[in-house]
Amino acid sequence: MAADGNITVQGYINHHLTDMTVGEGFWAINVGALSWSIILGTLFVISFALVGRKATTGVPGKFQCFVEMIVEFVSGSVRETFHTKDRLIAPVALTIFMWIFLMNLMKLVPVDWFPTLAGMVGLLVNSGALPDYAQNYSFLEQVMSHPWSYLSIAPTTDLNITMGLALGVFILIIGYSIRYKGVGGFAKELSLTPFNHWALIPFNLVLEIVQLISKPVSLGLRLFGNLYAGEVIFILIALVGLAQLPLHFAWAVFHIMVILLQAFIFMMLTIVYLSMAAEDH
Amino acid sequence: MDINATLIGQSIAMVVFVWFTMKFVWPPLNNAIEERQKRIADGLAASELAEKDLEKAHEQVAAELNKAKADAAEIIEQARKRANKLVDDETQRGQEEREKIIASGHTEIEAERNRAREELRKQVAILAIAGAEKIIQREVDAAKQSDIVDKLVAEL
Image (tube, rainbow over all chains, first blue to last red):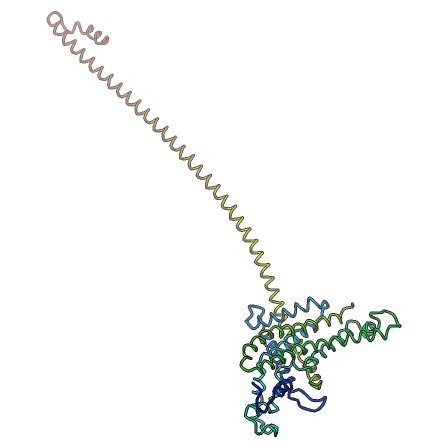
């Protein structure tokens, strides 16, 4: 959609990078990102659980084959890296991989489709929410001015979502550290490495805590940065008129790789961090 | 883009999804895969076993075949020997028969000749006697000279 009339280029870009929020301040919730995240997560667990429930040990169907391929792949990655027997890590890895993949996949939906659709539904269902300044706009501009059109469809372009996942991983890291090394072992690791001397405990503590915190932060920021940058490019491409068609296609094809790769990297790093937490080093 | 409660919501969603996956998604899928792997491994082992059995059966068949061939050769050899012996026997018997027939022919011919000779002798005697009678009729009584004729006949 070209930016014209009452919507400026800047406004258009801002529109696409802003999610519809409910609530104020810290307690606001990015409705689009969170609801799509939950929808996609539910889609994943339900479809996989259905396959799992009907799974035969004989000749599998095509979808079961596909699902089993993913499960095998995740299982292999876990076995290669995480050497302790643990029944939580593989499900964690599978959930992270599939969920992030599906959330990333939403980025291949052209950037204007979902906002336009949501704005139209908003106008039909809740036309009172249209801001006063937009009353005299053309129909399309009204659609894009409706608050519902701000609903974001790609959750992983939202820092909250990626950091939320990273926070989950962070909690798991601490949990695994305590479970496999005990509270004392974990505390010892934080305070007595890399320099095993009582006088250097504060220094070690600072170092180790920075190292500990950097894991989830880098996880969340990496995913967010990659996907957000891709999204910005998609929006910029959407601004160039008809020429956007080949450009969008090329960028989308390239993005298929980013989507898979980032999901895989997030999963792999989660496994690595958890195995580091579980093993002495 | 601010950090807000979405982060907490996402973390809670993550916990729920991970729990669900651990409870309802991973175990059945993993079990199915592992069970199938086991079945495939069993199937492969069974097929290997069957292959070995087949090989053994092949060897047995070959041995059996060789034995049958040897038997057949022996039987053929025996038959040939018997046939030869039969032919020899028959030939010998034929020979004997021939000789016997020839011998009996010889004796028969001999007897015939003897008889013919006897006949001839008698005829000659009669003729001689007749001749002599004719002669003697002129000079002597036949009855008186008969012993001389008999002696003559015997000498003939």
